[in-house]
Amino acid sequence: MKAAAVVFAIGALACVPAWAQTDLAGSADPEGFERFPGSWIVEYSPETAVRAYEFVTSKVARIRREVRIEQSMRVRADLVRVTYRMPDGTRLNDVIAHYEDVADEVGAKIEFTCRGLDCGLSTIWANQVFGVKELAAPDAAQFYVAAVDSAGSRLVSIYVAQRPNRRVYAHVDVAGTDELQAGLSADDVVEALESKGFAVLGGAAPDDAGSLDDADLQALDELASALGGFEGRVFVVCHLGGADAEGAATRSAACAETAAARLKAGGVDAAGFGAGAFAPREGVPASRLELVVPGGSR
Image (cartoon, rainbow, N blue to C red; front, side, top):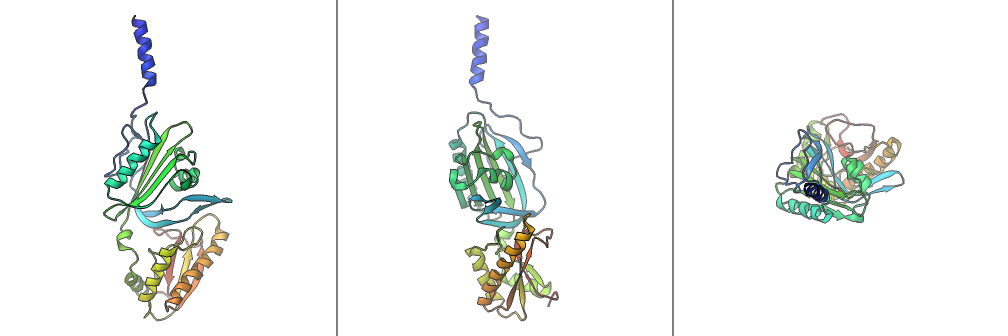
């Protein structure tokens, strides 16, 4: 009788999902974010000093061998990264619903969301965007939401994926930055040009392919109005990150000419220059637009 009871107990335990395990030592939930019940932290990067961060607001793809992100925002931010594993047997749809609610609870403005094949390649999200190999999954079994919190000071990225072994993972990026509130201040740019001779444009930044979207071009239009009374030629320098240095030089030249043409249309004496990946600088994004007045401050 006792033997039968033991067999029954073992069989019952085998049917019970693996509930909460121990969090990674030293890890913690991002402030104000509730994890999925029973999940535990398997990867964790604590808040770091200000670093360049790419906030992805589009699907991702690979064209030939090159990763393409159609739209993103590049800012300097304090970044916290947390990856959770769900209990065995958890349904992907339940985790997605939970994190949709989390985004709502922080009062976030949704910048982009996708599900399944609409997100692009899961391997790119896992390896290039987040750098967590456990997130790689079939493209049909993924979810992503990018949002700005109600205070306008944090960028939130949430990615959920179910691997072929049915394990479900969720990854949360929370990037704190003051660049969202400041945006592109045309007056600040003019002041920087007059005092320092150069200025990085936070409100207009190329993607890694050197493309400028409608928001970038609109920011340049607003800047042209502020620069209307600025005397002398202004150079628009386009910097692009990435390993393909030769290709970046070509693409950045086209990017710079596009930006310069936009400023010229607004009455600014502007010329373009493509720096490619050959002028990295700590504390600013690798891909950026910079205005430079030759000879330093005026």
